Length: 165
Image 1 (cartoon, helix red, strand yellow):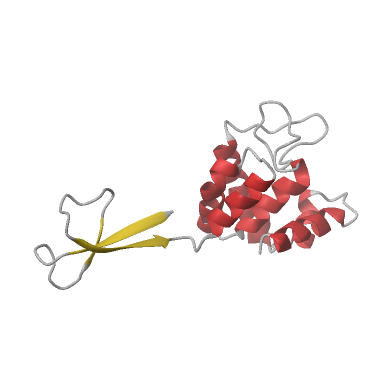
Image 2 (image 1 turned 90 degrees about the horizontal axis):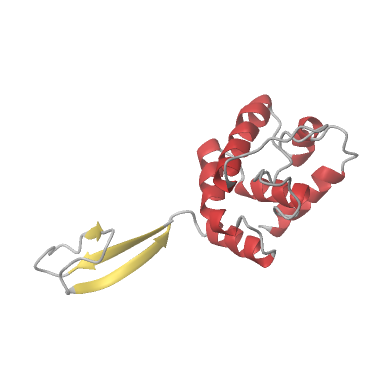
């Protein structure tokens, strides 16, 4: 999310006070504008990474960061699991919007209404079912998320998270 702060001229504010507008102010005596990226650039880094792989998640980079922030998770984890499970949504069950292999087992497929629904549902589940139970690293998460893995799942997720630093 980007916030643009305009510092106005003397007839509206003599103290140099900053005022946030959703649109440009009607007066033309603007001294300066400051652009602040509220998530520290994380969503743009995620967007660029997703774009590099032509992922359908690219338009949802802000949602990934916002969901992770809302549930107290590392946003890189959400992207890394999607990369590990589906190549960033390249191989998913038809009309599932499930890039995370979440709830897919023995003929069962968990479906989401869209990618945003998938992002928020998976992130919330990781926070409630995993983080709350002390499972926070890929190695710990793997024990419940994909218990049959020989460690390669956690290795892959860690590798992707490191690339997103």
